[in-house]
Image 1 (cartoon, rainbow, N blue to C red):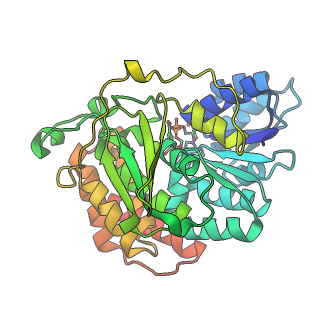
Image 2: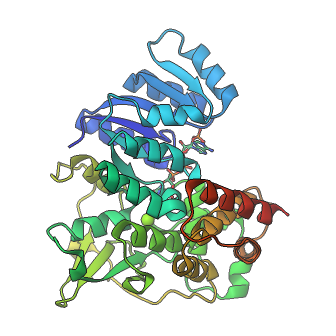
Length: 379
Ligand code: NDP
Ligand code: MG
């Protein structure tokens, strides 16, 4: 059970919803971090009074320090300060809600301090899942997933003492805004089209990932790392309504599912209250008012990012770090209107073809693979 939190990425979609939950639950806040959103950070600091506020952008940190001169909050700038926020001694739980693999080092630092990790930042597990899970085991740190699918699976495996009883994890996937379109039609879709997600309001990077289905590919890898299962035991099914958040099939034929209205505050709150459950103000699920629940196979021909992620997951080593680094860079170009929608998949494929995979990588080798993949995209 959580009393005091630090949030890495407090100004983003998950970060802001976490602060809503913190306010409802009366949690203390030790440290908050953001990249450059000074206005939002100033408001958060004035409301939640953390001891530490970090802006990774140095100019933003200087500006924030001036604005907060009348408060007791210490302001730090730069990337290294993220680790200081992640290890703030008062916090028992660190919510990792930054976007991208910048979350890796601070997550490892928090694990070393035996913090509970409420993990939203999926890129960290995708790039260095084995390192992170091994570090968590070695330090006895709990990793509680916040991603709705992985929270659903986590809830469905409560009471399962022997993971060998699990036959298969089934991740549900909304299909994104371009579900059902052919390859050529999808190729014409713009940044504005990709940013219209049917069921969830999220940050821009994950929204584009949801349109390419790379998000589901990253989630397949995330599930494999969290539960140490091979790809054959992790499957994806399209479920347009986002009511069933994911399922676990056991060897005896029982299939457990977690259902709820699509509201990230539920998995965020569960990561705080686990192993207990608290009250949630989220809209209750009324089965009689639900649309019919439908299921379909994803189209890996049109949405090749899902297939590429599954291939990288099977190859292992630095393959997933290369896939992720290339995708982060390519999505950045797409969001800047510099490339088309199918160029994202094309550039990820280019980086995967050009950057050699190293097996059983060290942290340094993972960071080098990430850098090489980004370079391959920009070359
Ligand atoms: P947002 O883009 O909304 O927020 C990202 C946060 O990270 C902001 O606080 C931002 O600060 C900060 N940030 C951005 N770039 C950097 C950087 N280079 N260094 C340090 N901090 C940085 O993202 P989301 O909240 O949507 O997603 C966060 C993570 O959670 C992602 O990994 C995503 O995949 C995962 N997730 C999100 C879900 C959702 O519903 N949104 C659902 C499941 C998982 P600033 O505001 O200053 O830019
Ligand atoms: Mg998800």
